[in-house]
Image (tube, rainbow, N blue to C red; front, top):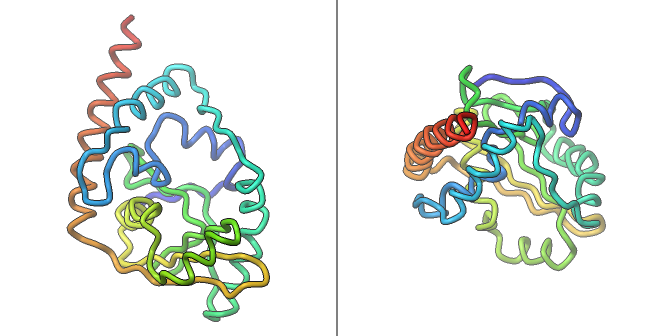
Length: 200
């Protein structure tokens, strides 16, 4: 694990993420069952383009996404209060010094990490009622554990005025092993694609 200590969202953070797979997009590489995703090819094209141009692909930020970013600090403070623990904020974590892929945790502790989501009210209530890690974030949460080497990860959903949904997710070794293989293949193919583009 190699930690880059820069503010998330800063130009330095954006530059560090350019052209490399990140855990928030691991669902484009692996399905929840550990199979290759149908989105992998297009994701490789995107990242290869970022490597050639040096520019991070622009993503549309919905009002809900902007609101989620604004509420993240509030949610993190609540998590710290509930668990009486200090959560360290970091910018980016690479798997190793080769910097082939990364994750951007919403917090790190001694033995686990933290992922915070601040969804719409009805989605938050759905998370509360179902009481499990939402399938949409399975690859991201377990991918973050793979990148950091940690054995557990807290998932928190926060909506002001409602009870928070907090669950501790234990590492799925079988999935992480499959993901590691898929990431190695993806990164190899991405390198070859980038070399091919540079030779044109």
